[in-house]
Image 1 (cartoon, rainbow, N blue to C red):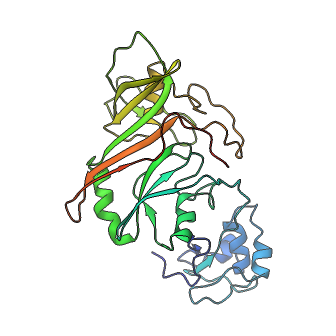
Image 2 (cartoon, rainbow, N blue to C red):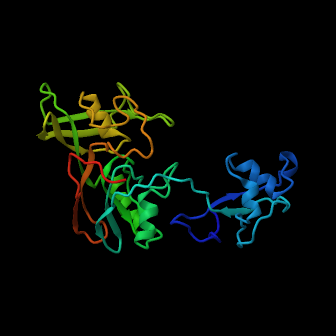
Image 3 (cartoon, helix red, strand yellow):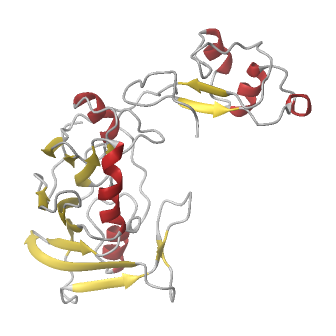
Length: 308
């Protein structure tokens, strides 16, 4: 583990760090200086020379790392990542509940839950750390960027363990609603059970025939809106894209799904067609005080396009 960062958080994000190898490999690998090593470790699109010039890299004591500093083994170097411009998601993040331990929010579509890839500033974690003045706020479960609805977060690291254990032990009752086509030949409720796998780098998850079941969803037709159905989805497991794949497998893919049945290219700033999937309810027994907790999204299916 690295020592405490000498740099304060910026935009709600902790500084990144690198560590030189334990042994002095400078002669074998051509690292005569710290500048040589940093250029070899960081991607080509990172302007290491410019960052060194403005003293963006610091050591454990907060002293600037200079390009011509001799390479040294087992040395930590800290820096802030350079953030790219991101299309702003201006739709509101509704705070459904907040107390000493938990924050429950109603996330709009197109806003990432955590900072990653091309979505850093436009993420629930980064925005709410600043807006709520909770620098250690962190999510307790996953919610896809294109999915709307309830996301539960811990206010401090000390609360993560008890509540994450609930999700790991499937002790949280989660209910979703989705808008999808009607099929008269399907008699509801239906329970879909199969094995789902999503390979790293692949956009879509796939069903693996004859493999042990690792995904289960109960699907009920609750009402109709024109020629579409509003389906109540109760997942017993939480595999990646589980609900989307299970409805697609029944021949009723969720309306405006950019991945199923086919991958559809969507511009990063196109927020006009939200996926019609809503994480609508969370219910559980609180592991800290034993109280019964139930939260409900303010949004409803069908989901309208929200500003930005």
